[in-house]
Length: 446
Image (tube, rainbow, N blue to C red):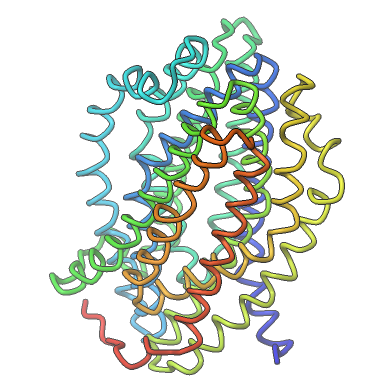
């Protein structure tokens, strides 16, 4: 049974992260609503380019996962003055990798868009958006690492406050730059990407200033971890990065598959995916909490407590996302009308959104346990589950029922629900059988 004390601790850690995730969702929806006024081609282009950007970011999301797991071990082992060493290492790796990656990918943005779609309007609208997002990869990567650190030390409110300020700035900049307000020229999709890039960079500067003020006693920029701990960071981050890379690539391939059906379907899919993130990202927030509680328990050499925390976070997450997903399942049309202004695109999105709304409980289980497994040191096993189910099952069937057989978006989202159920059964088996407890390495050196 889930005790009241444990429920309070889960919610205390999760609610600030959840607030940030909901804020991110609202920002995505506001962006989609703004860009949607430019037409279906612009909306579809931003959706396609956005997932390409997320693909490039996957390595740095993995680094943040490694930071959180190792910092949690330090905190659980009462090694407070060394807790920021993994953060220091991740920021250095982020800088070394992200800057050259941006220099490489910004000039290739047009070619990337042309490889993904043959629609001239989508290419024209998507290229400038993708270029500006690629230019800000280093800022986004640093922000993820800071999020992992503040979550692991049990101060997610720092993350929430910074993110909210960043999002307010993002909305204001997008409004001004997309539509050309206060004497600024209307930049369209270029303005949407530029506003986001500027806001993320300001966020990175804010996180750094806060860490200098509140994180020096954790060892922020006071030293790097040992070679052994650096190796542990890379061993944790690499499978998580590979998992995120192929998960993001899978979404990009999914949008490519949908683009083969038509522009209206692409616009409908972008709206559905943005709404889907309203429910999925809170699951990620609970997953971050599970990672923190599991890694802290293992740092304190309490593997049974780690196991129980994973199960209990799942229960709280399932209850939360049921409430969030229910309106999407019951009333999809009025929600979709906020983002889709063309009747054909609206009609194609209704059934997929119903499937999303009623299937959110499944996503809660799989996303929380993915993070719990990573906190327990099973990042490689989590990666295997993700790759085999997405690339071996979902994407081939999505192409089969979509462009090849012509069953449309509803069939694609039905197949997606089946794939998530398979994932859930697999990761629950890994967690409940507790084989990971037999191979734990509790030691983390400075």
